[in-house]
Image 1: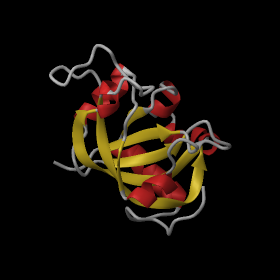
Image 2: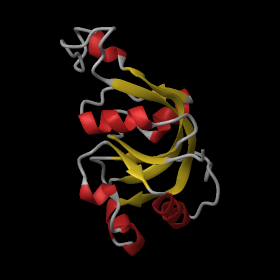
Image 3: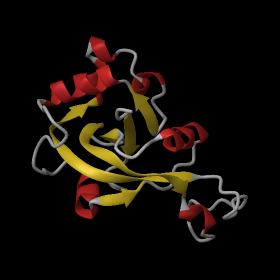
Image 4: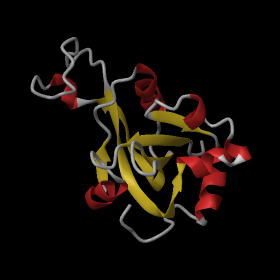
Length: 163
């Protein structure tokens, strides 16, 4: 089975593509939307991810990652002092899940939301239909268009840069 594609959003002040690069691999915790959680449960190791900086100036696709570990219970739901604590969750019946992501590269340039909106081939992208969803599927065609727009040809497109 070939890799599937996803877009995952994070506010760069909270966790940026630079943070993922520094860690190498990191859990994607704190997702508290059922549809986003369900998408993460569909992810497989090796799936390719567009790392999107949200609530930034400008917002846009900053880099690439790969799923390094399939969905597993998000440990923050069990931590009473965590802002992501979920009182209904137990280790036997977790409510929220996370995946681990591996850094795959920075894009040569950030592809802003405004630029992406202007590309006819991306008009049906979930990014524009479900703009508040932090984890969303991306079609292979959309993924290819975004890589071409960024000027890259492979999974690691450029050396790290400040976003």
